[in-house]
Length: 511
Ligand code: UN1
Image (cartoon, rainbow, N blue to C red; front, side, top):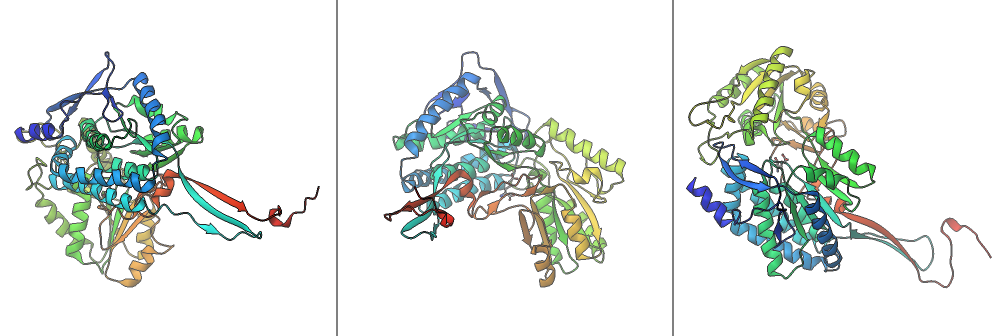
């Protein structure tokens, strides 16, 4: 507890109780409503935060519009330099910010630090990118003509992020959006608002030290802000991370006004365990994937599709590994599994287990909600494992909790069709030392997911690759590779430096 108050103090979070921030300017209406941020670790209130009103929102958008006029004209490598300084500031704050993530969200301290490391990594990536926002040149079919394309920023990018990665997801979006010349408005999850306040405070200091105007990085607290962003024509791009259910609402609202969206929605990720797998490695990959972050990553492993020849043996080893899991305070580095985020998450976990049992799921590691010391918050649950069939309704859904389903297979074709046989398409993996199997899994006839791994689990993606998935996962890509293009508009330019005006396709038009 003492440690946490120091962390909050170091991050300057307690001095700020705002509903919005445009940078150094933090504010709230006199009659602002408040919400409490509770730690799932011990159920205690960390602090209250005020909720932004429609007027606050208007004021923020105005500032962002003004800032864009300035920011878009600053050379991209200069924008990159600001992002470099942001990465340096994050290095200094890694321990405090990682600890706050762990305490406010409930993930392990190691994972909290890992999340801040992802922020630092994406800053480094974005700095390099700031000198590489390349367009192509093309050969014109007309003489003495030049054709090329260039990429321009879009304007204000709205970022709506989820509780499970309360700081990293924002940075994947914002670091790229900034070097591309956009300004950002961030609505963090109302379950982890203090992480939002802490991050905004860090970037605000960097911007101030560089005499940058208000409005380049903006924060707005509260769920009401989501609708305002989604329906606002002044926001050409909305990046949303969250459930498929809400993603559908966001996507149709934004599409209805011909805005663009980047959607990172639910996953239902499976690992195929071949009879040619390295079993020890597979156990670690599967267990970390299923119970890491208490099963609350979009990339969490939800299904294991196991070859019949090794099924019983694998099941026994898995059960043994589950028996060794230590559940408890995620700030204590001896524990493997922390709490779920809140009561609603615990209810969904319990409901999924009940529904699974009704459908025929056979639990080989039983679940249950933990109580008593040290589980007083009521948010700690037992990671569990059930034998199921892929078509069960509950198996087709994403339950954001540590419930792992086992499914048996005979042939690789069958395993791949089980793996693909869900509505979601985020992450997938095969554990095999057999080259033919690995290549088939990665081929056009293999996994239909945005992420497909060999001898690595489904979670823990690096920032260098494009992150996202297909089908009900929403199709968006963030982070590495050429994901930056989604934050820019492409313009094709043709320049005629001849003395005549030849038309394309050889069309004759004489006056
Ligand atoms: C998410 O769960 O929203 O691959 C993102 C991973 C992380 C990102 C997960 N790098 O598990």
